[in-house]
Image (cartoon, rainbow, N blue to C red; front, side, top):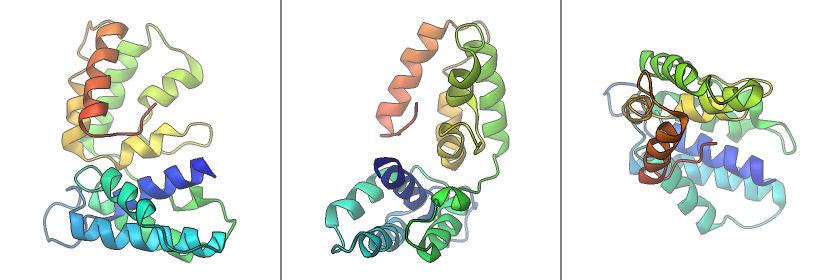
Length: 179
């Protein structure tokens, strides 16, 4: 249930920013985040047989506005709104990585390949949704500008410890829910 809420919040964050005529990968704005998060949280409340929670909407807005790509948030929100209760929300997690995301994954693998393997490396670096990882969609949905900040944490020759310290600072600065 907590994973579904996290997915809903992320989806809400991703879907909130469309419609301003700017770059489709621009971050979701506050108004779009509110509308999308309200839709997501209402669907969750309806399925749980409860009232809409203001805290659900607020937490979702905080995780989406300014962080999630508009071109991801809107379709994900629309998809979640149509899901039958109990349906796995993974079907809604569709995202195409930008060039910034591709650069990040390559740099991340080059640095973290020295200290992580298997699923741990995938969770840290993958930028597309995958059947065995949870982090790919989360990173893909993040705006290219924030992904560029994460890429700056994994320059060639960086140690895993230095990359982790930098990564943690970026995660905290943007209130990201990344592994």
